[in-house]
Image (cartoon, rainbow, N blue to C red; front, side, top):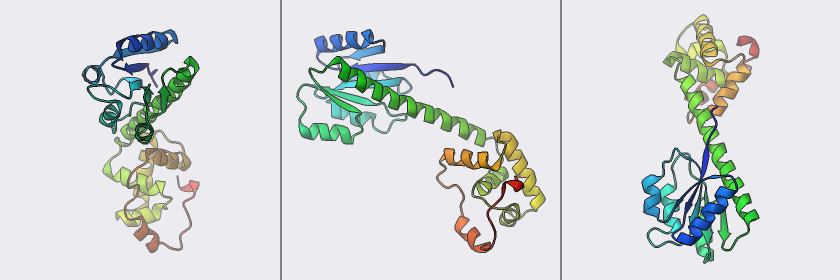
Length: 228
């Protein structure tokens, strides 16, 4: 997986504080981009840019909570560290409920900032790696034909070849052939790897009609690796 370059974005309308914070964060070894208004930030920021946001809670154009709401739902979501000298309890509660990683009260210590940045950037990295993994898995899954995909879903649920053949209206030998294609295309060496692949995909509907299928074959034992 390629290296993910992260940037610490700063959004604070207090020009002197913004510049001082930018120097501090840059001195800690981070890449930094600073903005003095929410409109300037949204005009230049790209969701594809990895990192986190140091966000002033109170600003004249859009306040921090409004910026947070605008960023909510974007994938991957940009972790937010709120910074404020006048944080009230309701605002702090709203910020944390909105997914903020931390709230730093001015003046804060360098150690507090370093810890908050470490947590936020670690969250961002996990999300982006998970997103990249999902894209890779779904790309590999997209190489399967519709029939191979159906076999994949049923095998992942532990269904035997002869049961799959009955469900799909085909021969057991044909199911075995499709399973071989699935294993080769996905680069898998065992049924256990196939099941793990399916689990990591987090498919919304991993196998439609499974309850009806279980009712049709109540006496069958779970699939063994010998059928792979």
